[in-house]
Image (cartoon, rainbow, N blue to C red; front, side, top):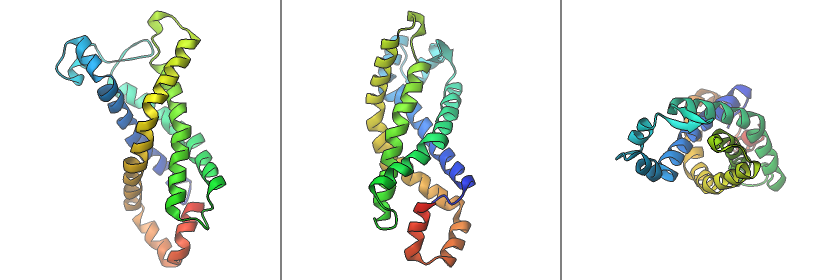
Length: 199
């Protein structure tokens, strides 16, 4: 897959772009949608969000686009600094990319990434969406963090494994198809998969 730093950054950005939008939809519509509609007496989640003046974040109501932008920046930073490099190392401790099937190694990377990123982003979200109007309590923060991890982890695991990563890999191969074609012309097909995984 990614062969250099620029391609890694593009891959990380594409992943985060799809993931953050997915999580915002999941959080607002799936987890909190019924509550938002009931509290604001509105027929749809979007109407409920508009009626209350935005989404609660940092102790005040903010527009959805600002929430997405903040989470996008935080997720991209964490993915580049921690998620990608650490998940590769963790996967390499269990599987050898030179000997094991590439699908096993890619799946191990996805699982390791979810295992690292889900608790990290949930911890940030616990700070972002903490009910500051009630005062601050560390135990409440930790309880909210644990609740968010329990809500987000199953969604993160299955969406990354079966939807987001296959989609991102397909889009990535389309964007860098010329580079991939050039590599395939010079590297035998049997060696190409292990070269991709080692990069």
